[in-house]
Image (cartoon, rainbow, N blue to C red; front, side):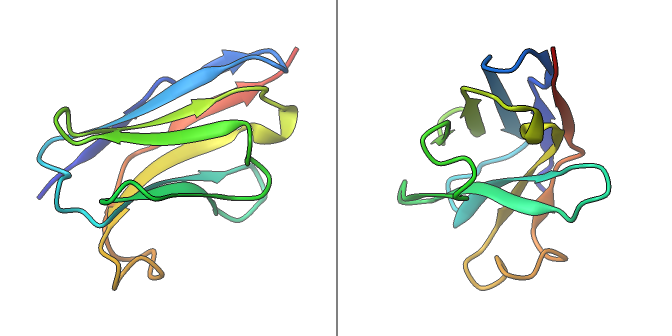
Length: 121
């Protein structure tokens, strides 16, 4: 079973940048979709961005133009570059990998343990 481990979170000032990494213990080459979710205190988990095995990217409206997702299959790693960060981006960010058929079912697929991102002055 492939495991996902996120890193790169931390405290950053508004307008700053962070790059999150999601390292897989095995190959992600055959995983249809890799994505980033986030959950802020008192709020439901939401999908931030995902990328398909073919490199097609998709973003939530709230992060379009500020965040960029990428995947390096050779390194079995997915990244989330976050620029122009806002206080409302504060959340725990989770990495997930799943097939096309199970993507809409959060109870399926692979999940990381999460990394905290705090945007504050």
